[in-house]
Image (cartoon, rainbow, N blue to C red):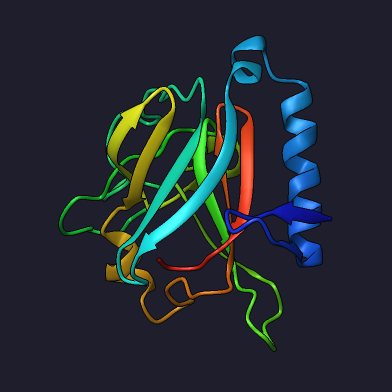
Length: 179
């Protein structure tokens, strides 16, 4: 599988991403017409490893309501007391998944942010903090749990890791290159 990157280069992705992208496609096939209206044309990463800023560009990029309505801090599925802005999770309508993709890495999933799947007993402790939003562009960062609890294990994002953003059924994956 090849991806078109924001720098207009292509890169072969790890096998794990190929599998996860196939899962996302099959989920999209059963989604309603509202999911089909969202289109993601690019995903860029700026900021730093300690505060990555993700910019999603496309069409029909409406934010879903927070699900659950409260932040993940001190929830039964996330028993962490998160200090600072924990952000929110958005069910399966808006989330980010990151994989380690460094030389010698096993291409394991590092973490997901913003996802809540109660049937699987999953609530991402890393919430999403939306910085700006229009129907054509969403800029967001991770909630405080990202640095507070995941700095050492598994670790923060690095250049060369792979991320995928899903928003209302549309998805886009890219390789992290902090700008």
